Structure formats: structure tokens, C-alpha cells
Length: 429
Ligand code: SDX
Image 1 (cartoon, protein in one colour):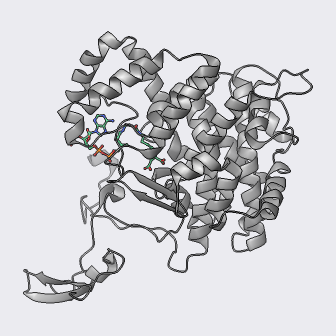
Image 2 (cartoon, helix red, strand yellow):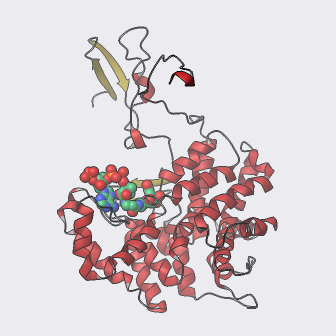
Image 3 (cartoon, rainbow, N blue to C red):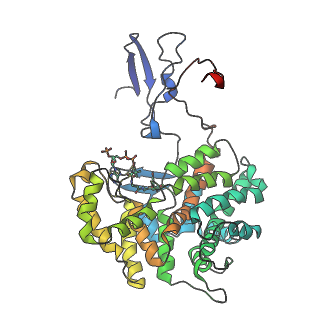
């Protein structure tokens, strides 16, 4: 077996260099030694959008994009989605092991009793216009949590990290529900600690003000829990990268989570589920699909919910969500958008344009159809992504904070601007 290294010849100087290989990577800093003379800064690596750059070591989520494999702490997503709950999955992502019955009971208690938010949060949410996008409300309100929990700054204190972990996971659905009720002109519903995590979320969304004993249909409660499990983490995606990068300068985790929410908001990331429904609504009828596909292939827009930076095969989450959709539709009635989505998927998967680019349905392609059938407006879809992804963001943040190899994230650049210019007074420009 050849030794784990590259031998690099710099053809500018004829010099050779040995660059060690470890974990399937070479360290970018090992290329700095390659220079043409003493004034030369040395070679850097250039990787816009980090298409081939590992930014960290992580033991949380494993993805094999070619095989369509996703594992949380080594457990296949199919098994976790079938047997676990979102809170148990959050525990697994955060602590690396499935909890014992006692650990799970304590964990659920700690989350349940941190679902309330400061009473001032109502005034904060009321300050948004009624037609504000709930994701914009979420970003702002999550950031505001840092002003209530000043102990969040103690990022090096394990006890503080634990308390902020409970607060973030527990309060995201509360803030999301407050935002939803604000857009509907409805009074907020406080958390009900007698309900499960998903059931409490449904209660804060849909409970009538005077309704005493609220219980969602068990099928809906389980569907929401499964969707939360599937969205809980996904290794170094855009919003997790934001959580780690912002977290690396060591602000409180509420500020870092607000940054992660902002990254998720984008239509190429967590905002895609909202765009999928707008796309299906725009297509309107199966007969319009061929013309739509033709326009996508002509570069006039994207097939939203298709494609993935890592998956070059079917996103395993999409398969599970598709199956869950049928269970929800059996209860609430079939969403007509499903027929368009199914035909769109069928045509796209037979078309060379998508096959050659290895574009398959991702997690966002079917999730929006379920959310719409559950009664959510499209603007809420990214918020429904952010709630469970908080467990992944916080798990990744904790891993980064305690990783001795990590420090403040500060990439380099290739400078392409002017140099050494003389200032010109405005009268002479
Ligand atoms: C999520 O990273 C994660 O893990 C994210 C996520 C998570 O759980 O955190 O999985 C969640 O964000 C899922 C992705 C949701 N986004 C969408 O569905 C939006 C539509 N998809 C794309 O915009 C795109 O596929 C991305 C953003 C998901 C990935 O983009 P890449 O890896 O940067 O790929 P690219 O833009 O360089 O595209 C490669 C080629 C291009 O064609 P050419 O220039 O080579 O001719 O594929 C084409 C693109 O035009 N392409 C698409 C397409 N996606 C890529 N063409 C049509 N429709 C699409 N959806």
C-alpha cells in the first residue's frame, strides 16, 4: 500500500513536495510551503462555495450522496424515522447515543418545561406587520432571545450550553406558532405542557382560544414528528455552515441560530419547499408539465425540490416523506398538487437533462405538499424546516465549540481589484 501522501512537483521551480493524506483529505495549509521565492506567500486552495472542501470533523451525520445513504450517529434514517420521535432524535444527535428510558424522560421534561418564551416576546412579534413572512419574524425573534438569556454568552460553560440547548429546541415551535397566529390575526396560544412536542405545536397553531382539551389527530401528530425527524440534521449544509461560522467567533448560540435561520430562508435551501408549491401552482395542470420542463432545460428557472449538492441519487428523506404523504392524505384528503408532483417527477427522471446532471427529488420536493394538506400556508414551510433543524444546528455548534482543531472562521481570497492608487479630490474626478 503506497504511503498516504501526495508527491507534488511545482513545475515553476522543479521542486518536489510531500503532502500527507489523512481521512481522504489533504490539509490546505500544507500547500503554503510551495512558493517560487521568499517573497511568495505560498499556494492557497481555491474552492468557491466549498464544493470540495471539508471544514470540520464531525461524528453527527453521515451522508453517502452516490448511494443515497443518510445516518444520524450511525443509525439509518429509515430506522430512526420509523421507530424514533423528534425529541429522542434530537437527544441522539446531541449526545451521540440513543437515550435510556430515564435519560429520555429527563430530556423530554427539560424541553417541555422550557417551551414558554418571555412575555415581552408577544410585543416583539406584534411589532411585525400582519403580512410579514414568518421566516423573517423567526429570524428576528430568535435573535432577540439573546437579549433575554445573557448567560448564553458563557459558551465555554457546559452547564450554560446545556441550558441554552433546552431553550433553543423548546422555544422554536413556540416562536413559530406565535408568528403563524400573528399572520392570522389570532391571539397566541400558550404552550400546553401536558402534550407531546408535536401535539403542543399543533395546539399552539390551531387550538381555539376557548378550547379546553385539545388533541390533534394521532396521524397528523405522528406525521409532523416524522417530518421533524427527517429535517433534524444534514451534516455541513448551508445553514449549518452559517451556525458554525458565526458560532466560531463565540457569540451566544441564539445569535448563531438566527444566522442559521437566515441561511435556511433562502430559496435554494430551506426556502425551496415553499418554492416547490409555488412552482406546482404555477404549472397548474399535468398538461402544462412538458412546456415547463422545456423552459427549465432552456435555463429559464429551476425545477425546485430537485437536485442536491451531495445527493447524486434519490434523497432518502424524499422517499419517506412521499410515503408519509399518503398517510396524511388518507386522513385529510388528497392534495391535487400531488398528481402534478408525481407526473413531474416521472417525466424529469426519464429526461436526459436531469439524468445527466443527477438531479433527483430532494427533501423539499414532497414536504410542502404534506404541509399544505395539513393546512399550513406556503410561507410557513421554511419555518417548519427550521424548528427541527435547530437540534442539528445546536449539535453541530456544540461539536464546533469543543473541537480543539477549530478557531474563528476566516477564509482567504484571491484579490482581483486595483492596487496602489492615488486618491483624487472630488473636484478633479
Ligand atoms: C436543501 O445541503 C443540504 O444538505 C441541504 C438540505 C438540508 O437538509 O440541509 O438537503 C436541504 O437545501 C435541499 C435543496 C433544496 N433546494 C432546491 O430544491 C432548489 C433547487 N435545487 C438547486 O438549486 C440545486 O440543485 C442545489 C442548490 C440544491 C444544489 O446546487 P449545486 O450543487 O450548486 O449545483 P449547481 O447549481 O452547480 O447545478 C449543477 C447543474 C447546473 O447545470 P449546468 O450549469 O451544469 O448546465 O445542475 C443544474 C444547474 O443548472 N441544476 C438544476 C437544478 N439543480 C441544479 N437544473 C434544474 N433544476 C434544478 N433544481
